[in-house]
Image 1 (cartoon, rainbow over the protein chains, first blue to last red):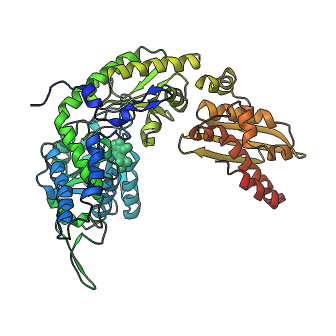
Image 2: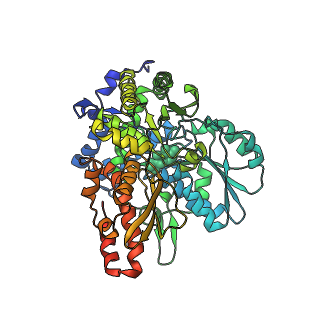
Image 3: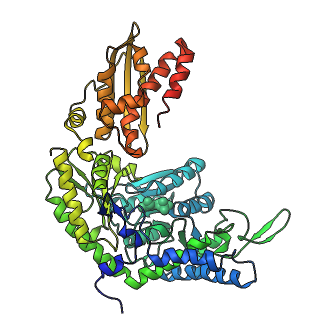
Length: 413
Length: 142
Ligand SMILES: Cc1ncc(COP(=O)(O)O)c(C=O)c1O
């Protein structure tokens, strides 16, 4: 049975970094959209691998190599069930979301996108869901079209059908949750429309998978990418999910060891899925660590995490909207957004605000959040961003609000 | 510490920047940005008889970068180029009263000096290649 209420104080004990003090004050970590902190179970699993069964995987027959292979491949099973994939062969390990997107742009894109074709993105996208497609389109003579958003950052879905019905659309690639303003898009509906025109859909799940229940069988997306480090796991582990049929038809991305079946002087046959897309020695230790992160998330329950974040976001939005001179971006409805709050306070530049908050040991992000297309749309050069996860508390939000008051005093607002 | 950074004088230069704007008949125009923060500075220089006859800056960014640029223009307007040439990063930090900035924010404070030095490189390129070379080195501030 999963607890229905998150025991935050209990959870916090599992994260050693939360004992850190900055300028004599306890660290308030509100940059979870960039990367999350790691529980002890993840941290110790990595040193356990190196101290007790470090070996390369997949080829050797001795015991510790088998242990390592098992631990590595067990994570694949955990990922597969975490997102409810049809089979473990649909789970490819990469370095991060960015690499997963590039893999598809390279292997799938070069085969399926040609002169005059179109790829549809939205104005909400992270640079890593823009640049690989630009490179592809420039190379193939194809073009990108953007779904637009309104002032609250909601996608204008009225354009969807007219955009998609165009014969030349080859792919739609959208982030399920905006990393810059937190908005969640109605992905299932969009997939349905896309599929009714026979167009595959790529979901950038870097922000959604860590915070929202993600069931690829239910959503029926063709591709999904996400990063382990944004969901309690170590850096250096990303996932690409794709439907098996699509993966089978795709050419490899990185050629080398592990991704082959037989190599001869002038030709090679490729390994079965998923190994066909995992050339070279992978990040064994961190994939094992990522498995422990998934165990941790499963123990808490992703629905409970979502509920906790809605509560935090609701409280923070209420408190922040009372501040004079505040500009809040994104949907005002906490149910339509993740625990990401982007804002500006008077004429205080986000970098100045982040400096002032740092003195209170509060870590927030300031800048364009790798979403310059969105920033241009919102007509701001930069915003400040606070983003939450399972270990954050209402008390921390109170500390944050007090620090915003301090910043206003310093800037005589 | 932020009480020290965001003093009245910094806020005043941030909100009421001196010599801000564009110049149509500049001898040198130079632009640079700090990709980390998105701070941007353009500097326009007009030189007459070896003096900085007019200077304007344009740009956007945090209080530190903008105030620092504004104060730098005040510091060198109508002064000989030879004097502007020798301004060091310590001079800037002292001038704006921020001598203990962290490594991330120090770039904000020094962006305008970097742009100015790059501008002078451009100015000296044909006239005095040796000076241009030295300035080029100097513009490597962080
Ligand atoms: C929506 C979105 N897409 C892609 C990325 C890129 O993730 P990574 O840096 O792990 O490749 C991020 C991370 O910032 C993100 O938030």
